[in-house]
Length: 262
Image (tube, one colour):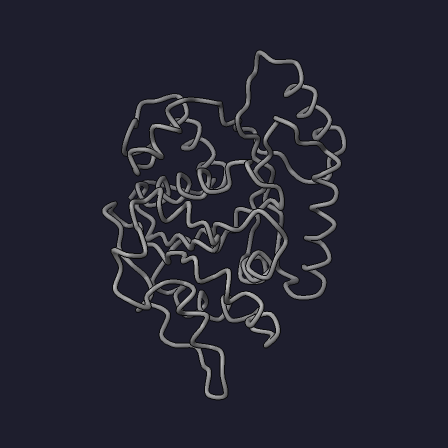
């Protein structure tokens, strides 16, 4: 199963959700891969993986670059995958080089290469999560073409149901053109304050319009998330008993209703 965490708006918590869902998945026993497709590399940094600490030429940018040229072909993708310090959790890390590579990949129509790479890795992993840039660019489209399911983070601060309509329009167009199997798994409400009126109104509006399923789990706003980033340690390892950690575990079970501990 390949899931992409996507929203074309920035600041909605894509990287935080990608990393923590992947970490919970791994902690539950699934062999899990996190793919960082954002040039900023926030997910990689969150897991304590910096490009200068990696062997040269071993990022997702290097993997995609190998497909360019007269003799460009997809190399063995597992050589670009790195173990993290957390059991069952591996990373295909980002690189700033993604920015300079995007135009060339797009011009040469390499938009299916990530899909091909992840298909080659499917036997090694039970779950694959993909973190995406905050726009509908080449890399986001590549991730959506490669994925089976989409998780849409919704931040109640300044976001609107109309934005979800626009996002779903883009997803449906891409589904029709490139990936007929793609399914919007649901919207996850992030930074939720149950005591505030506006978040309640926004969630009610989403539920009423019924454009896309809404996960029952709400992710609360908490300083523990900031601490988790600073410590470069996912919540399930940093604070297993924290309320927000419990919410990520609840969200995992919504995604994996048939999960049974080994």
